[in-house]
Length: 469
Image (cartoon, rainbow, N blue to C red; front, side, top):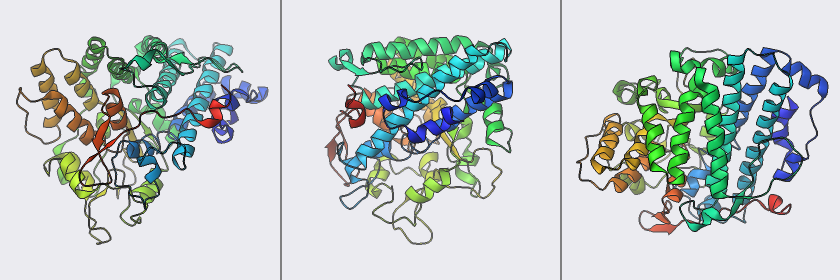
């Protein structure tokens, strides 16, 4: 499917991807004239998301986490330029270019999918067509939102009225104008409203999450709704977007709508987190409202986190920093399960095992990376509640399901929220955006055992894109 997959490999800027010629008419007709063909194209969009240039690595495991000072990247480290916000040097510049290009290329492919579904009416029954369109429109909003969070201004400042990014809703061959961030985010919300309406008959509402194992990625993507942008994932994404916008009333509303059906995304168990040694689900996939499958995940683990990786290339925190994040509490499921000193003796410090493979290769959670979890809904609600004690109660729900004792109702909720974002989303790419949304410019220096660094949130538009403006 050249239009939907190969385009990513050959596009290098927003302008360039808009110049791509239409796919061969015969292939287009073949793909969109059968239900299976349309489903295959939609699955291809999800596979695009799991590309290492996007959520398979850059936007979850490595680049975005280095920007958040997650790891120790001293001057001898291969990614030190990213940690020091050297945006005009490589590898920072090339990685940011790849994120931009692949994101907008996938948006183009989404728009082509939507246009072609309309172009070949009657192939799908109405319910299926609505669900497929809803997923695609939600994916378009998801990508645009992360583009805004990364390349856009700090939203809670006057910069939200300045020109930021272009929003694409069609496969036209012109470059869309730059929109102010407040107009851009309204388009995201408009898309999510459309998606929510279209997904009103989503199977997840009636059937919950199907956790049956599947032999093929395509079948797995079809049958497991928490690996697709389902009805509740859209509501959860709306909660995330509204909080970013500063609309806590709406953020709380949508977070609570998901929390009301939290049993569909059950918390991990203490048995899985503390007792299971051979095949633990370290990413807590039962809690996933939406996630991806990256079939290259364990290759990335071996390159980034494996204890055998050299100190100049491994992504691992300084011990003092890691202990501070988890408050030296081995009862915390996330600390106990995901961080270990290698038994082989190749490293004297703890390394990151969250994305290490398990012995049983039939486990349904293999290759999974969470992009939206039920825990985030409770954190959004905690931050959005008008009464602090109610917010602390939501925090305590998360803590109880992480093996921790409850907090007193009088704690500083912002301090505790930041701790939970640091603990709960390691290797998932959310902390940098949290810091940026809260205008936290001074954060703990990942490459020193003490002291802070000033974060530079002015991530520039890639040079290849700026040339066309």
